[in-house]
Length: 146
Image (cartoon, rainbow, N blue to C red):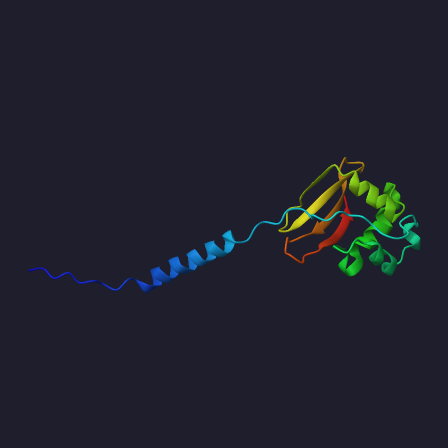
């Protein structure tokens, strides 16, 4: 008579599959964020020349769902904008609305808006921002560059 013995499952393999399953479930529950769903609509005196716009004034012009943490974007707009026909925050807003494209930038949750302004190499001026798609997430301006 043969007696069949039930062997214990290999616990390390079991744990590996359990961890893999948990990771897949977590990943499946996370949607990749799309572009910022909030319109870029400035408020206040948007016709002031960049040289007359302070950090505080710029911050107050931004829509509530947009932020410029560290004011790097603001610095880039002030220095690069006028050389490219963007003399005021209002000019920037108009160019953003005339965008050529809005696409992933290459880093997770980072997007770029290609403006219809080209440099001598034919590269579009880009508004780069981060947006992770969370319920309370804001669209965070990163830089203005070619």
